Amino acid sequence: MDELNAKDRRGIERLKYIMERLRDPESGCPWDIEQTYATIAPYTIEEAYEVADAIDQQDMPALKDELGDLLLQVIYYTQMATEEQIFTFDDVVEAISDKMVRRHPHVFGSTDVGSADAQTLAWEEQKAKERAEQSEAASVLSGVAKSLPALLRAFKLQKRAARVGFDWPTTAGAYEKLKEELGELSEEIDKKQQDKELLFEEFGDVLFSAVNVARKLGIDPEAALRQGNAKFESRFNYIEQALEKAGKTFDEVSLAEMEILWQEAKNKP
Image 1 (spheres, rainbow, N blue to C red):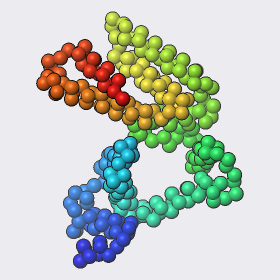
Image 2 (cartoon, helix red, strand yellow):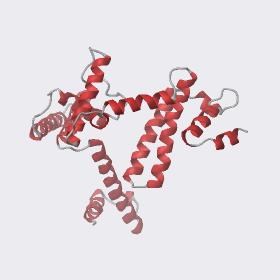
Image 3 (spheres, rainbow, N blue to C red):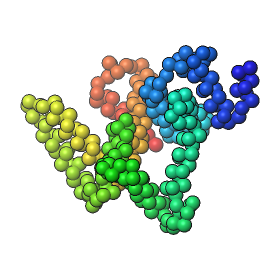
Image 4 (cartoon, rainbow, N blue to C red):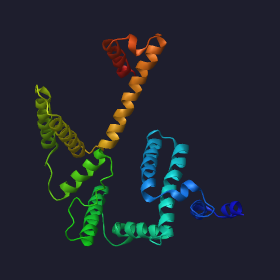
């Protein structure tokens, strides 16, 4: 009977019904029943990254599957909230619909926005207005989730600060700051008695400054690092394959020999 009920439903209603059944305290799945917002959160982050990976790979069948997995996370949270009578899936849909209308007055109202850049500015201004309405004492940096990857959170914090004028006027200024931070890190590395805590701090300053340079250049640092990771993986795989063809292992070659293979990988078309 339950299988028939699930098949009779279509679209989002079918998925909501399935989750409701999985969470049924008497006849549901023991694992699903035990889950909480906190236990599901790591899966949500993982699924979001898998969506991004499918896009990077331009794998549309995988993207379809990963989007389904990500949607399931939303259904999971809203089912739990429905059980606790906090909010429902429909409440979530209404809230985001209202927000999209509110933040696009040039589409749903009479405001004129001349370009994508102007729309981005208007979007951020509307978000700032909403934050101010929620709390008069809220910081400019309020709402930047602490659970974001550190690189992405640095980018968002810098964008927020830049909106109120706390920003280098030019890319050159941000780049000079990066060089300054690299110099401070280098000084600490060169000391005979290294302070591990200070090294940790100086390295963090270098990363933060590098993100700032990326922002000034219009580069998404998270996307840039993903591409850098992919490049490293591809070139390292070339070394592995070359060693396998030669019947050798990493233990049997020197770093200099590996460097030669690395340079070969770099020069591949």
